[in-house]
Length: 379
Image 1 (cartoon, rainbow, N blue to C red):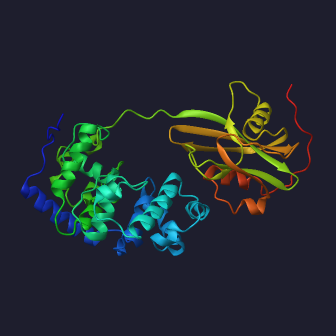
Image 2: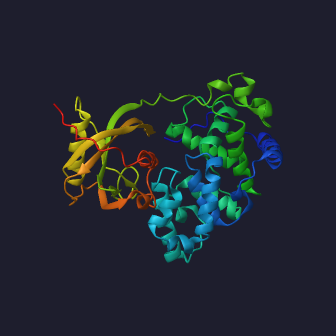
């Protein structure tokens, strides 16, 4: 079914005035980020991938370090995946880094490191969707491709009092129509950045700064005094509480680290300690033994609890208890979740790329060795 244009698309008069007001505001108030001072499609692409689901201020140091190490497509394409993951460490959503690396290899192999100028070609690369392709091409080459992402979608939802949640496929089609209608043929990349900047700094999800908005008088939500009602909320996400045990297995001063498989649904190719969910009413010590056996085939002797960390991943709130355990044998047989295992001293383990939760577990070992204790047995 084709989309009925409701809310209606803006008039020519509205479009002309909106572009003028927005451009004037952006040129005066935009934040100064390093990726805004370049037309290099590679540098813009790296920034766009890093900015997905990550705050811009957080991205800046990662972006600068990444470009120093991998200044162009060729450098990234020829890098080892371990190097890429180490520089990405702490940004999260590590599948982005793997896709970035693989896409660079394809760009170097099939396009000589050059970026194709049509979004359909760019979207064939791993990790590049419609938004990313349009953002790169409009900012690097001033090609007239509109963008819609979380910030610009929120601006449009309030500007035109969109009566449905943004997650609706019908609304998504309408948003792209609006973005295309408003996009100027001259400096489209600047316009796209301006709309996103407005959403990121003024048209905020909570407590929007309408008194600072250059287009407030043209915003239907503002004129109706219903800014807080837009975008129309979706059903709240249900967070599931999960209890896990991580087993930090040692043989003297060497610790066992496992590398996740490339196709793992979480933290692909990163290093971690054996961990898994606790069964209902399962004692923690028994869970530690079971998890070590299932993931490594090792028989271990748990000695003591090192502490607990909590973190959220997608719709799960995970409470992970870390147990120290000594190995009774060293022959590791991996489960399908992992691709490699290493026994190494703590200082060498720190050189690997770890997920954020498991880097926190590493800090629990800073005071190792602990006074020896007898293994705990369950009753």
